[in-house]
Each structure stands twice: as structure tokens, then as C-alpha cells.
Image (cartoon, rainbow, N blue to C red; front, side, top):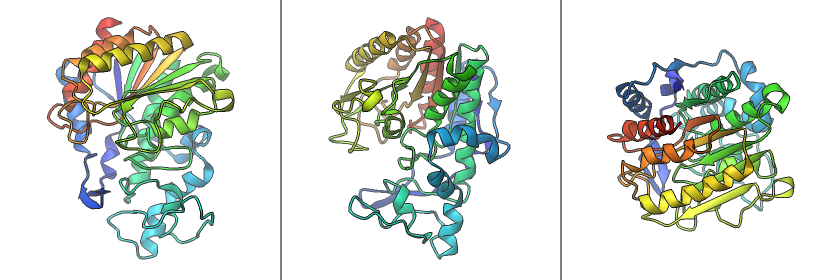
Length: 351
């Protein structure tokens, strides 16, 4: 399986995140990419393909199908506008949110983050927009490899993407890499090559951004296994009652699971989810791959063991369709490479 990754991801390196009224060291660090690459090399995977986007113009035809123009313009200019008005150069962080009862659109670079950010855990630093663009291009490039006949690929994206919606960001995510990969597949050959695509999210946190983007579309089945949002981030999305709207009704499936979910319960739920996907008969599957389901993950709430991850890969391979893995979360630096490699190797062994 070919790996694609953006070597300049380190341009995005916030030092803190604001969580539960505390400014804490951020968990989503550049070291994650190098540890995953190290794990893949140890397993004998081929050397990764380096990805850099040549210009924003190259990206825009796909970006504008997923994200709004106003949000993209904000992302490209947020840091400069913030610092020009005296904002802390440590990073852009909203201090006021528009909320449901205020509908104005301020011009102030200090206030505009509150129009687009839904939390205080995704700082925008000077290199964030560039790194996010490269990360998005990594997912798009990997998706194009499937369009060219590859059966599987792995996009080692950083920053991650599944919390980013059409016009909002948060949860370490700025552009929705998995959604962009799905749209790239759907656009292949005028939509004829991949008429239906499944997006399976196995990060511990619900992919609220991905759900937002595809909620009204029947050509993309979104299925997510995640920790119960009644008790854990992102709190306001990921419930079983969220099933899609209009043409997309029935094409959004959530499986919230309790704190402490272990190997057996998780794999049983994943098997049920995969049966739903198989019934949809997708031409391809994109997997938002988070390994923060690991029992020793510092911000996770599940109890999966290392042995669960190869089996997860084997179960996904049972769909028997072209599959793209897009990296999301996973923050135990000691085991990160082993966990990702476990999923990918399990997939390849079953295939």
C-alpha cells in the first residue's frame, strides 16, 4: 500500500490548546507523522510519496466543492488579519462566538474567528493554512491513485480534518481531508467511476465536519463509530437520531459507544457498521483512521488493545472495494506507529 504525506506539515505547530478552561500543551504535534512513518518503514512498507501543493489554484476546484468560499478566504487570511490588529502571534483563538442569537458579520480580524471556529482547541498559527493545504492535497493525491487503478492507499494527513465542516473548523482540523478525498473519487470520470462512496470514520471522536458536509447527499454514505457525544467531544453531534436530511435521509449512520469500550464490543459494532456499508454497495470506501481508540491514548476513552488494530484492518478489507485510509487522530506517541501499521497490515493480509 502506497503512503502519501506532506513533509512540510511542521509549519503548523501550535504550542497550546484551550481545553476545559485550561491552556494545555497540545496533543496534536508534528512528531506524530514521523512516528507513523517509522512504524511503516519497520513493517516494510514502500517509501512514502512526498506531496506538496504547487498553488492554491490547483486546490480550489475540489476545495470549493466541500468548503464555502467565505470560509476558505478566512482561513487563508486569518493569521495576518489577527496579528495586524494586535492579536497574540502565538495563534488565532476566538474570544467571542457569534452564537445562535447574533447574526452580524464583523470585519475585525480579532472577532472573525468567532464566525468560523466552534471550539478553542484549533489555533491558527502562521503556517497553518499552508500546512492544511498540503494535507488536503495529500488526501486528494491519494484518492487520485485509486482513480488510476490502485486498490488501496494511505494518506498520512496532518493537520487532520474530520472535524472541519463546510464553513467551520475545530478539533485540530481546518480542511476536511477525508471529505475532499471522497469528492475527488466522486468527480472521477464525471462521477461514473465511483457513483457511490462510503466514508467510514473510526476515530474515537465523531466526525461532525464530515457529517455536516454530506448530510443531505445520497451518493455518500457516512458511518461513524465514536465515543458517546452526550459525555465527550464534540458533544453537539454524533447521536443515533442524526440520520441525514432531504435526499440524504438514511445515508448518515452513527454508532455512539460508552466509555471503556473494549475489543469485543468495538469489533462487533464495526462488523454491524460494515454490513450497512456492504448493503450500500459502494464503489470505494474512504476511512477516517483515528487510533485514539487505543486504551492508553492520553485523550481517548476506549480500551482497545494493540491486537485489535490488525483485526480492524481485516474487517474493513472484507468490503472488497478500493479503500483509502486518511489519518485523523491518535496521540499515544509510544504506540502510534504500531497501531496505524497494524490497521494497514491487517487490511493488506485480508485482501
